[in-house]
Length: 308
Ligand SMILES: COc1nc2nc(N)nc(N)c2nc1C
Image 1 (spheres, rainbow, N blue to C red):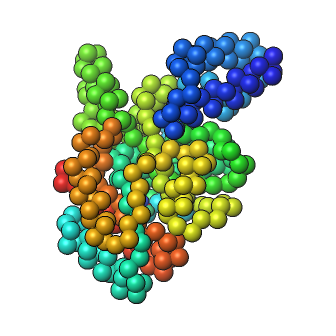
Image 2 (cartoon, rainbow, N blue to C red):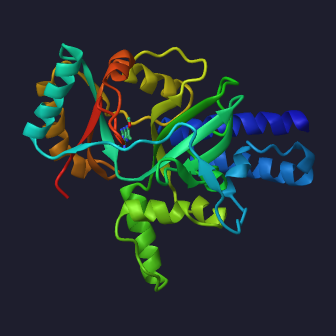
């Protein structure tokens, strides 16, 4: 029995990863559902074999009295904003002035969701927290465990802290608001508010029903990983099983950054999620270190914001 339970837990985790993280299903829904029901029945009959990172743990069920505070050992900083091409080029001039050369930049989409920080110990998710004021957030671990694209266990037993965005896809947002209207409930103004409302639920079953997803983009504490650029960090995050937004691009000049921005200005209405800008980062971590931070934001990154 335990072999069958362990086999089902591993298989369903693999199928879940393929479906929710890589967006490439390995089996059809009927096959997945049948195996999932078998595992549910076996774990119900043999609860001693239920594990906290079993695929059946994603349904939630904890109702918290409130959220504990979560202290960020490594503070979550915010980004400076630029709104015009001129401001973007001025950002590049400041960077070049400090570095003495034109660095490579990496461009990433700025997802309109909620910042989250995920902490893993020996490869297991031990804490998920909201950004809060950057130093103190809310512990939302039980809710984040119901977000299917968040790995409960990493392929390596390492300590790691990663950061990214939790968001609600446009399609889920429209379906949720339609349902709420039918139920005479107040609708959400936009997917970002819907995601925030869904993550701040004290009943994790409600969070589990909201079809939230994630894109991770920052290795806060690298642990044993050897990475020297942001581009490598994104690739590594993907290899560790995190969902990475595919629209990241290394640019060799600020002109190339600008054409990436123009490109997405038009494309963004076709994306299945909302973005409010493009984040531009100096790619090399060594260069990031020599640029450092202002009081609250990195000097080596900026967010080009699209007009609302
Ligand atoms: C380096 O710091 C950051 N990087 C980011 N990258 C992306 N793609 N989106 C963000 N919202 C973001 N926010 C911050 C503070």
